[in-house]
Length: 163
Image (cartoon, rainbow, N blue to C red; front, side, top):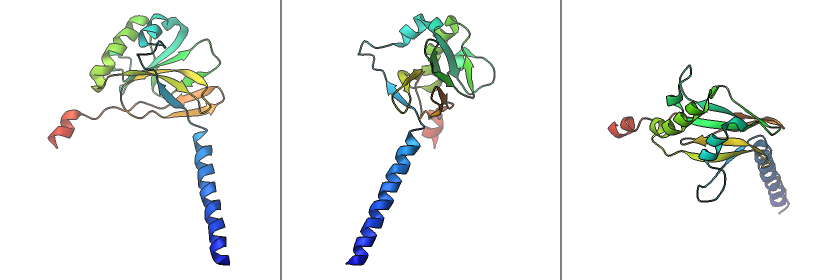
């Protein structure tokens, strides 16, 4: 009976340790919250109209600048104390390119894009991400900086169908 109590205590301790480890791991990562179009929240058109209020970047899989290759667009507000950053995100040059990029995301991914808020682990607002495909990893660098990893390129549908 005494041995069962020892193992029970040890089991409870190990489970608590695993839960605590998972919780502390998550405190370093951000999250996305989808903004439904049905509510009167921010829309992609609002962001396009107020493009001067943001540092705007896009992600693609190519070298160089090509508005028709966008997989997603990141909006980093200029008027707050937070910063969004990433390795392969390229600065959008003008509003005309931004409009073109929003139209090409669907063509490049074959998925309808949606607008998301980028939030820290504590719910702090960092900016917006407009994209349509894949998992997005957001890692907190410090209290004011969020690193947004590259967006996934969708798999070719024809390749999946032919095999």
